[in-house]
Image (cartoon, rainbow, N blue to C red; front, side, top):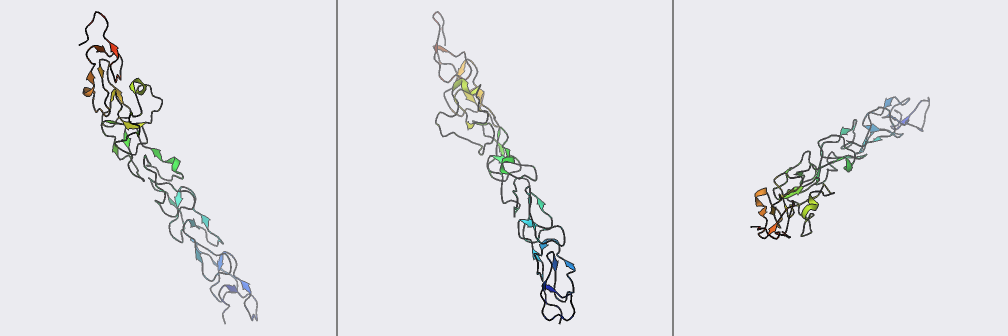
Length: 246
């Protein structure tokens, strides 16, 4: 009879096959010595009558191997029997042993137009003045709406702070330290479409309202007062003695 599958029979007068097929080889039956190397996309740990396909997230691009290799970070290995890892697509990131191209999407508020990201931290924060409204984007969704400011990493065209007063008051907006704030346009300012920062109402004008969309909505300073500063929300400087402030 032919030598049993999974074994090789190198000696004459063999009665029972006892020599297991070598790791990295396939013995399909009738083998004197192992000679068929395990194919790419597969592994042969030993005593193999057929090669075993690499599991999803693994690959093998060399023949005659006893194990598969882990799919490296920045790539994905989809399905069984992968020979060559595929580059992680734009809009996604792929840690080691990733099994699907879009298993890990860049989150809301970010995007990526680059291939081969390996970690979420490599996704690009949404461009100031724009918003990124869903996961897996390769470019921003569009401009921030008028009446709002998108300082960067906004996930909405109409971001709005939970605080009723918003993120700014008066002149603090002009020299603010947090340049990435996304919020409703604050009092004393106006925000056109695509604003990455609020624009202060000019001296001589004022506004206590949120969400102004253009400079014309800044009101003239209240009668009996003067407004010498930018971003005035409430007129508090009384007209000087001897002068009229209409």
